[in-house]
Amino acid sequence: MYLLSKDDDTIKFDERIHTDQKLYLILEELYLEYAMAYVFYYRMMLNLKESNELESKIQDIEETIKEFTASKDEAICRKHKINTVLL
Image (tube, rainbow, N blue to C red; front, side, top):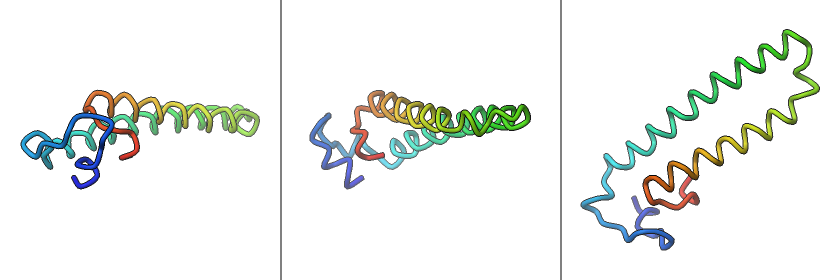
């Protein structure tokens, strides 16, 4: 909560709105997004490994995962009006 109170780029900290429950909601959304991504990318890598294509595509997969997680972080932060620096 301390970091949320120092976030000058968005709305001002209001302890009636920015509660522990709000923080748990944000963390739950992030958890769900990352869990779904983990399952998706893990399955994709298993399929590529079975077809002996994993080694040639691992760099692309890593970059795609970084882009995906950054976009999810931004979307959730925008939704909750917080700065991505918190993540």
